[in-house]
Image (tube, rainbow, N blue to C red):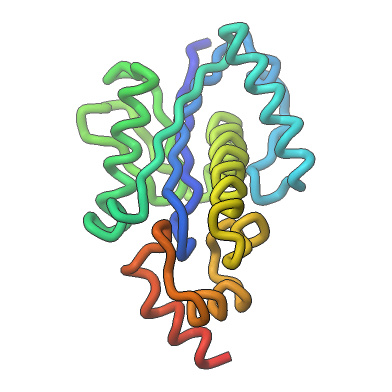
Length: 199
C-alpha cells in the first residue's frame, strides 16, 4: 500500500498568533498506519497530544513518518485574508515535504492544495476519519501551542499560555486594557472588541 499525505491547520480563528499548517506523510512502516487508535487533536487531552507528538517525532527520526510545518504571521493573514493565507501555507508545507504532484493528499475541512496536485481530496471532518489528517492535526496543535506559550513570556498580560490567542473574555479585556501587541491580528480585533462590549 502507498503512503498518504494528510494536511490540517491550527490557528484559523484566534485573535493573535500565527496560522499553522502541517503536512504529514504516513508510510506503511509506521505503527500508526494500521492502528485504529487515532483521534483528532481536539478530542485529546494536552497530555495525550504530547504522547502522540513524541511518538511521531521518534518515527520521523526513524523515517516511518515525515512531516513539515508552515507558519504564517498575523501580518500576512491581515494582508492576504484567511482563505489566501490557508492556500499559501498549504502550498509552502507541501513544498517543504517534497510531495509529488501525483501523490495522494487528504485535506481537512475546507482546505485545498494548489491545482498542480492532481490527487487531492478535501474531507469534511477529515481529522475524525483519516489517520494521516488526525496525526497532522496533533503535530500542528502541539507545535503552535508551544509557540504561543513562548510568546506568553514576552507578553504575559494576554495570558497566551492559557488562551493560545483565542478570544476568551479575559483576552478581550486585556486587549481593551493594553491595546494589541505585535502578534495580534488587526483584521480580527474590531469584531473582538464589539463581542467583549456585548458581554
